[in-house]
Amino acid sequence: MTESGRKACPDLTTKFEIMPEIVKSFKKIPTVWENFQAMPPLYQRVRIDNIHRVKSKPELFNSHLQKLIEASVKGEMIGDWHDFGRLICY
Image (tube, rainbow, N blue to C red; front, top):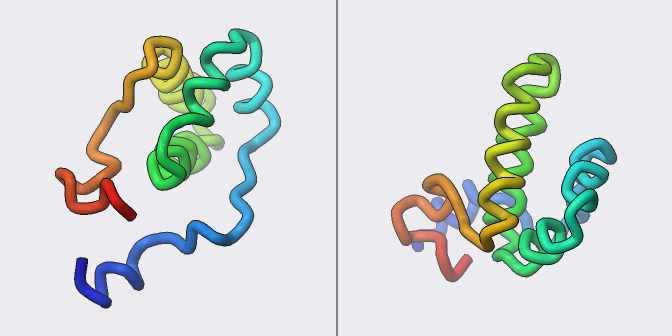
């Protein structure tokens, strides 16, 4: 990755807050939270940000959250969070 690419990526050393209602939904099924926590930090931030961004639209918020929970229960990662493989090691 180039230096300009690194600058565009989030600082993974800063504390990342997850909305309490999201954490509560994840923890309803213990394996969901465990699986999600085992995934790469960048993946967690990208997926959670995808949900945070639509918090003002309840239907979309719940849809994104449910999709992530369904994937997490299976231990699957969804979406292009890694920019087609370029960010896997970030």
